[in-house]
Image (cartoon, rainbow, N blue to C red):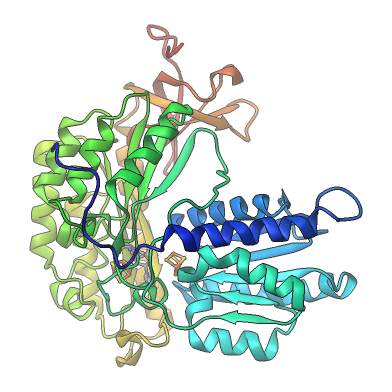
Length: 486
Ligand code: SAH
Ligand code: SF4
Ligand code: F3S
């Protein structure tokens, strides 16, 4: 595809550069306040829950905090500003946030000047905002994910007035380009390519918290990837709730496979990953691009959620069991060794045990490399939360245990098949076990433990796999290819 990078359409979803400029001016205005801090720079702590999209958002929050004169710290103790970037996907995630936010009250009593902010998906739930307003009075600032780009304005307002600020109106969302970012790693980077979700799976809160689907312009994305590659990033992950919807709101024939192929044409030694893919929109065109671009990692996260067509319908997933299996077959016809991971929900309202057993049989048929397994958690405001849910907790957890057992066996079998092979891996960090002082990832994203010189961190190297567990591979630097890696 050699079409234009500039998308000519008047983008109603693009925040005007003047409005972004204004936020940068608010950063300067806060920086004048923080410059008068009595000793050194004030400290800011950003705590992240939830998905990679939230991790990426937190890197923007940190970028803005640095512009405002803060030094980033990794603990709430002694922090002058605390930002909790929250997730609403399951009850358990929310309870953890409420527990941790509640505990911050003690630190605030010791340091009443401390500013506590809560943002992310929970902030966009009306009942949560209400509860924070009434019962968590030590929280100064609450804003939803669509308002993230206005953080400097809000923080300044809190600092100047010392009043509480709530910016939690329902918001369809827009796109702000040109915000400062402070990335957490030097090897791996996130690049959001789109925001929001239009799928409204009946159990899921995300379409209510993240607004409507909107795509970044291809030029902004490709420039960002190019700059990351030039800085030496080795693994770049393209993010969206459903990357396969990319470009539906753009002119010029852009779609995800086109973007991915263009990104793979950028020079540099790096691998491209992406998540998440909704099976209904994962096309053969995407699989073809994966197969022909060596820079695109041979791995796909393709959540199936259930192996039963009736349950899939009730979940509003818009594919059947057979259609899911056909997608997997089309993918494997092109990439026989592709690493396939997925998400599954156990105990969706009304799911019977025979229907659950269809999930087990789909797992046996597909044999996923790894599976993220969840027990259904009702989310206020979603259609599924209104459905009758007769199955007991005990039955659901018995089914859950059966599922985990099946997947653990499959994961172990799949890992055993790696033993004796040589895998080109990115050595990405230090391990905790002194005998295996390094960690690495295969191109497909499987974790490898090995021992070697720490100077290899950040290099691609050939690793011979010697052993495995359910969760990881063990290996050694391959003798034929010492892995100097260039
Ligand atoms: N956009 C991504 C998923 C985001 S949420 C996608 O569609 O693939 C990640 C996973 O959390 C989902 O795939 C689903 O398996 C799980 N999940 C979402 N809502 C849930 C709920 N209410 N209860 C339990 N699991 C849920
Ligand atoms: Fe939620 Fe479905 Fe959207 Fe994923 S595709 S974020 S599961 S509504
Ligand atoms: Fe959680 Fe929001 Fe991500 S609900 S999973 S942080 S999109």
